[in-house]
Image 1 (tube, one colour):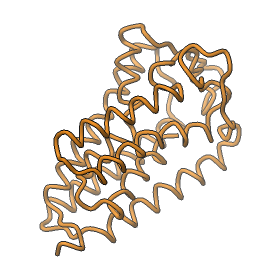
Image 2 (cartoon, rainbow, N blue to C red; image 1 turned 90 degrees about the vertical axis):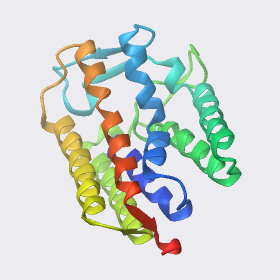
Image 3 (cartoon, helix red, strand yellow; image 1 turned 45 degrees about the horizontal axis):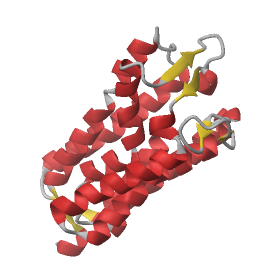
Length: 219
């Protein structure tokens, strides 16, 4: 899952208007933001199968630190705890912690049996929705579309900058989604890891857009 995670981050604005969009996007995608760095450090591993294509191109063979359930809970507590220490906003911290954990829960729906329950566990889970590319895209599209709708219904753009940056963000996210479906597979793991670091741009655009918007309730 890709844009589905970001859709949930956009929707967070509806229930937590004081949280910056950049922070929400960072939270829902946090596990995948840490993952490419661990790939580069050879701590976690993935196998590329260019002959299989689409949702079967990547075999997530080993990612216990970022994508085991136990560690996902740990990252959730850490993320929410750091936010609380900085902002002293308990409700928003709790929402962000749940947002981090939501990444693992959404991955559970689409992944094949590759998500460990705890680091280096032999039991791995996944409902395998990726087995149907069409259904996967419908689900992700609904999550993303709902997120965009709720964000737009929950904010007021103060100027053209907000509108331009926001729609640049949306177009980039959709472009990456389409590229993952029809584009060529990564040449190697290093190239994959570096391209995945590009996701930090989405976080930055979220912060930029949010600086030029006002929550609807605060208008």
